[in-house]
Length: 374
Image 1 (cartoon, rainbow, N blue to C red):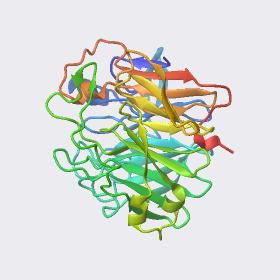
Image 2 (tube, one colour; image 1 turned 45 degrees about the horizontal axis):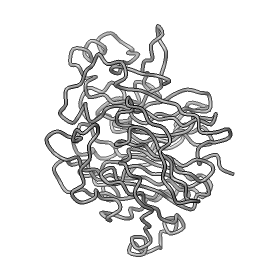
Image 3 (tube, rainbow, N blue to C red; image 1 turned 45 degrees about the vertical axis):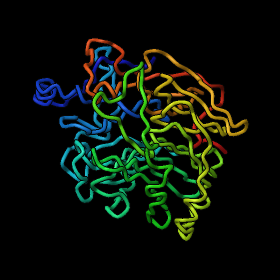
Image 4 (cartoon, one colour; image 1 turned 180 degrees about the vertical axis):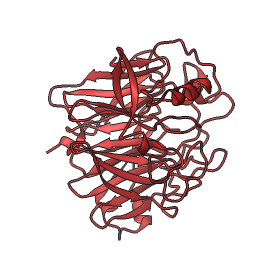
């Protein structure tokens, strides 16, 4: 356990902001999501704006008076809600092998449609602390109404980025899941597997944690969510949140924009059931795919060599394990954040010190992210 909170708190730049945050209890809808660490050893967490009042959606952890606080990254100005050029709502992001952070901006706040220009991919150099690029994701690639840009993987060797769109951005409406491919060289985007069975929720699927339905009053429905790229960059893995299957497709088909959409749809392989739903997945530099276990309360691993799934680590306090990633020292990083408690209609005990936790589990010497595979 590296960091833990009963509720999130920020290193506010001015007392009025803190007062407003506390008075309105905005922390009740503030989950710490994906956790990652850069090459300098600094920790980051995203806090998507699925409700009003989130001070900053992208953050670096700072220690103040012995307590971990969130500090807006790259700045407070860059996290200004309502400014489409700034970061509006970040859930998924990646820190690549060149120490650049790729920030996937969902664009929408509190499930309102994404304003034009707000859906984007922002690339920031952590070594020089400056923006390198901002790539707009238009309505025809990810619908401003239904999109829910979830997570991404980066392939600098071939010059591509792959993004999952869960299609769940319009509650109480049919899903519109899909995969988005970005070609760095031509700066073009393509949407594939739109509403394909593998990017949608599994029909009628419901799941529980500790024998409690995830959302008290209605089943949660979320399409393509976790995404991972194999160490050799040849296979893209992904999974819906509401379903247990892991799916895969050869990236060679996705990298060629002339590949017919129908051919891509037919090329999807169902790897099999992880025996758990997963919020995040991440491949290591040796070919394995690690995944969060929501039902299993922990993290598991898939080996393509033996085609087997196995539990890796579990703890009763690992309630809703969300993102998974690697540090530089052989450990898996992941977080648990009780999202279903915050948004599912259940009462939360806000005095409990482990509502939000960042965990580290040693995998092995030399084990790193897929990004560091030779």
